[in-house]
Image (cartoon, rainbow, N blue to C red; front, side, top):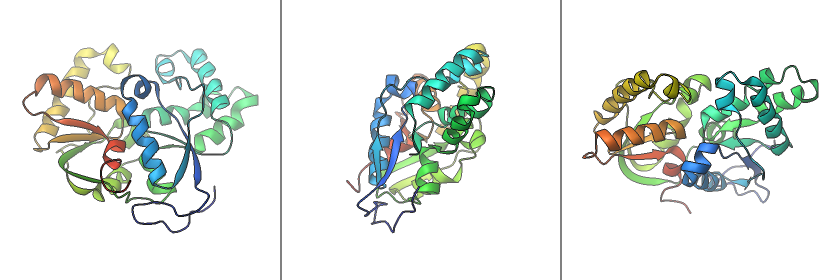
Length: 261
């Protein structure tokens, strides 16, 4: 991928030929939070990317893979390779789904016809904040949101992908945003995909603990870069802290707010 020229204020790229990006919309986002996908597309465009939405997208195979159904997960991985072909980077607003794509080389290691393509795809697939900061070098997107908020580190984003500072760099440049850290920012929210189904009592206890920590910051909103964690926390907060009226926002929605058009 070519190097970017100097950017205009707000992270916009003045080049006549913007970097091309393929937007990967995870199942959960498509079905339960499509607004996150729309915000992601706008944020990428604001950062100077030309965004395409490949047709025929399906599940990346993560639920099947984590349930031990590797053969069916391989079928979805092969399908994913067909949909997201070509050299352009793939960007998603979900660290857990990106982590799944990065597991494709191992999953398809026994498939000589697709092993190399799986490795190449894994290398050019990014979580949103990772792509913005590490690839585009865009940490100031001209966003503005006067709000006190707490940031939750998703296990998949922060631990599996090692993406911790990138979201914070982006949020630090949002005008008016007062970002507060919970006492234990890296504590799991309890969702864990199939974990929450297999161990509901443990999951609920972890969610309650995390929610209390976030509420204790005095924030009016919770920000997260992982849709599954966000929806899990939203459900718990709405049920158990209705008087707090805490907003639950995906990172992309925050970066898409106010400021630059």
